[in-house]
Image 1 (spheres, chains in turn orange, blue, red, green):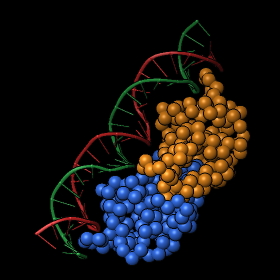
Image 2: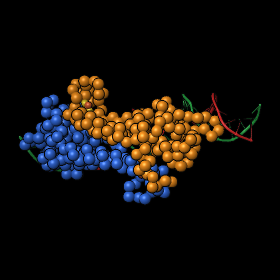
Image 3: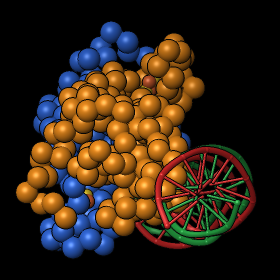
Image 4: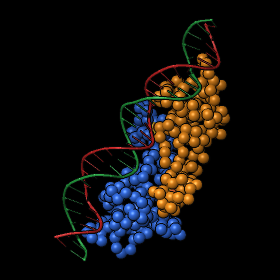
Amino acid sequence: MKLTSKGRYAVMALADLAKFNSMNPVSLRDISLRQGISLDFLEQIFYKLKKNNIVKSIRGTRGGYILTKNPEQIKLANILNAVDEEVKTVQCKKESKKGCNGKTSKCITHNLWDELEIHINNFFEQKNLKDLISNSIESRN
Amino acid sequence: MKLTSKGRYAVMALADLAKFNSMNPVSLRDISLRQGISLDFLEQIFYKLKKNNIVKSIRGTRGGYILTKNPEQIKLANILNAVDEEVKTVQCKKESKKGCNGKTSKCITHNLWDELEIHINNFFEQKNLKDLISNSIESRN
DNA sequence: ACAATCTTGACTAAATTAGTCAAGTATACA
DNA sequence: TGTATACTTGACTAATTTAGTCAAGATTGT
Ligand code: FES
Ligand code: FES
């Protein structure tokens, strides 16, 4: 299971983007300053977000990024997938008949981790960017 | 968020223990062979499980470990806590008023990660060892 | 006595994370 | 047209974490 700074920052940055999402694009520099995230790291993250069609970029002076859809159409699952933070709880390959630790059948905990994976993914499927910003509306900074 | 081999193996080993939990204790060597987990690593794990009163040990020849309670009284949450695999999704210290990235207030995603933490912990609170072994009853190996 | 088993601490190779560095491309605006 | 701003992309790396191994010993059953 993975939930690292990359995924965390991706969500944080997009929430910021959604919040300041007026007509004009938001530059990574602004996000970097507001959220305290390294600019270089943000570039890495937005490269992936763009390839996955979650944001689009506008180059040049006063350029930046904007969301491709409305905040309520962007699920957290989409974001985390885009930056390769898949929730993977089983250790074995799911398709394979083999289990983990080189066993020939699935291990005794396989079903458990599978259920957990579904449980977590449900959470990410149900939350979208809009939930996130309306939730923090009282604490704008 | 952490879910590593240590936690996975702890659950796997205890499920094994619960399954073969007759009068006589089960040696780590047996578990190691059945589940394909390094004996040395198991020792490390059971040291913690014992300190947290989840198993007790019986020394000497034909010794081993036994569960301190019935399988249905041992929640996965207990197990994972024992081996220090806390589900920790927020980056900041929860008690502190400060946010992550050295900010003076909680970040815009704080509430989200907090909800996720509750969501995952619910799962682990509701599952116990008995669920696990009755679930895999058809695939004894 | 001796073998099986638990007990506990120290150590380490490999992998992962969380970035940094760098060189370039595109665009807006003066 | 020059230049500042901002996106684009790949390569690199220090620090941390993981997943163990190694080792030396203490206990107990037979
Ligand atoms: S997790 Fe799939 S076999 Fe162990
Ligand atoms: S996660 Fe708590 S402040 Fe960012």
